[in-house]
Length: 453
Image (cartoon, rainbow, N blue to C red):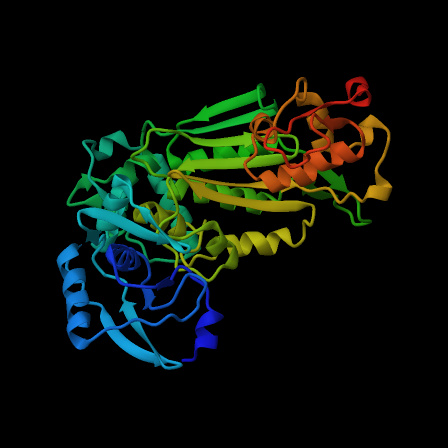
């Protein structure tokens, strides 16, 4: 390898540069072990410039020993020096560790992007369960079969039979054991969630504005019913257009493709962290819909990985994922978001939103109208929904952060592009500090024109 090749590299999920070996190097070793592995180049600065490092065989042995002593389970990475344009660079190759998590001096780190992050207690538990091919929903509960609805169980297995993904027995109890919902005649948490009464819920609201709720519902039905009940409420609160194409039957066009909505709903239900009592939240606005569920992305994934589609699917609740897979609702190969993006190719006015932070995952769809400056209308009724909403919420002077909060949105660039800039261009709002457009003290308020709309 030449220095030019290294210089073209950038730090990433699987690569880190270090000018020298130190404690933070061992921290990265542990973080790589808890993710998908990676390489550390010692003797290279953060910009990818080869600085070189002076090492002997004895020093390399000391590095190996330092990593072994500071990690638990003890890690023995492959360390090898290479000469790059006359300078020595040491490569530390770290493999993903099969039994997670690996600690560094009693602390646990994971690799996200190009940096290391502390792992929460909940994530530690998830890693341990996943390492032994288990999950939280497989734990047995203090309930019996009599607490479940047998009609739902029978209907569930009828669906599975129609899907043809597994051969079934005539006895539904045998089938429950076969797919892991019963363990030695003890009911699992997944079985209770699917067919019984439980405390988890799906809370859906139809909002006119962030503080005005038109309609809402709290669904606490068994999950095999809850998904359909949630879809019914969502359909009631999104628009439907009928197109006549000259054929005998009219064509229904929903505001959001129902296949995409169902996929996002199932994703929230299956990947929810059910140790967290917080309900799945779904918020429906005039121009966007949001799904929020407790539980961060698994395995160090970031939203960009889901959009690229080249990730390995990890399931927080393996039994729930298996149940909905067998019923034909989902695939288990991480193709859900690929199918969503394929479906959205037919809806250029919609944009998929994904985010995950602070132990919460959010997804949704935004309406993105195609508006050009020369087509900007002057009639208030023809303003974009985003501009109309800006005029509605902006009663006082507000910062961009406050506007985001009022709108219930997290993507600041989207807020700036679709709400703030069009409203400024159309003279409906103005800056409080027009001479300092990028000031951190900048606020926005209605103009006289905006107040009349």
